[in-house]
Image (cartoon, rainbow, N blue to C red; front, top):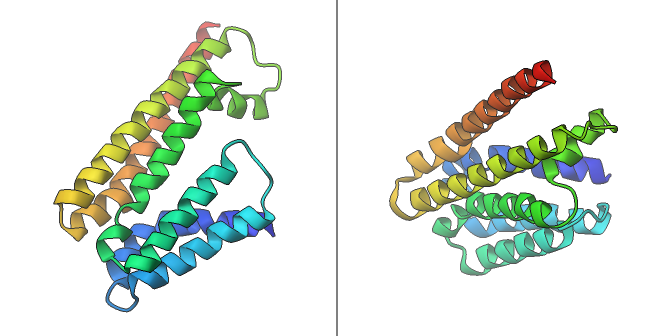
Length: 181
């Protein structure tokens, strides 16, 4: 059940900008808040406790409650900023406490990660921190000053294309680094 809810949240996040753009003609902002808040609440009630998952879920539920309370279409546009902030915090805190996120992910496929890879995974985590900071700032600027169509284009397409480029670039660099090792 928790995987289904996680998949629902992922799908909701991916489709969110388009749902806002096309859905505002048919649904009130409080309805978006209710649906999204329900997904986050279900995640809290059924999900495994991962580092940071509870405070992120509670912050998201708080955002959804504000959305439902104020019923503001403008407030709907802040969700991608919130998600980028979550990711920046998660990746950033992993640099200070415990294992960096990129190292944790690398160890899923290669549990005995060579010592030379540790500093590299740290740099990858730092690169993702920069990405999430920049992404959040662009999303905030578009929320404040751009029309909904620009906000939708960036948050629904361009941001994911940039993530894909970062993934691909990191993969190419990793292949090159592995070739040298």
